[in-house]
Image 1 (cartoon, helix red, strand yellow):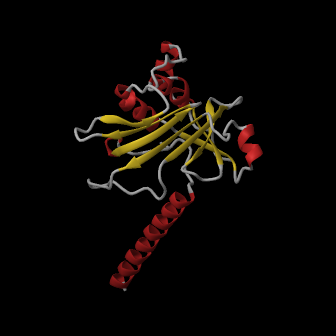
Image 2 (cartoon, rainbow, N blue to C red; image 1 turned 60 degrees about the vertical axis):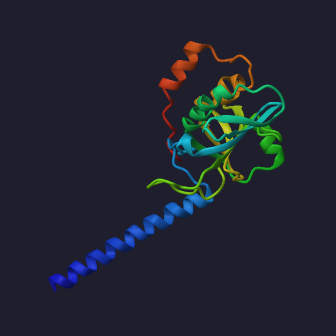
Length: 208
């Protein structure tokens, strides 16, 4: 009896772990994230190429043979030395909450998501080469809209899913800070405010 009970317990635990894995995988494929999680949890070293658009400016940067980024195409001047800082800013971006599912074009425009959005970033990752690295269910993509008038954050769409979400206030660095510096322009964010925003991220709202 004891042995049978142990076997049953192990089987139950395996079933529960399998259910948890299934639900996590299902959420990932559906683009569901938990409040406070990093929207793009990828090592910047895995980014082989990224395309960024800020307003009317656009550029695609690609890693060269030595590992440094080079300009593959652009609408104007690009400061490739700011590429690492830009990717670091992408890596700080936190998901806060869902705002609306399956938005219409009119609703997207209402939230500043265009077309075109205020800013957008698309990442191309190298295949997993280290233990623990995974392949994302969909290509990493951020479409950034306007600032929320209620909470410290920005409206966005993540990974091409139709829902509108709220991401952290650190998103301002992509559109008004290092995002402009990448194109050789001055940041619109005062340095003290910028440093404070990087050190003190807002607490995510509780899911309703």
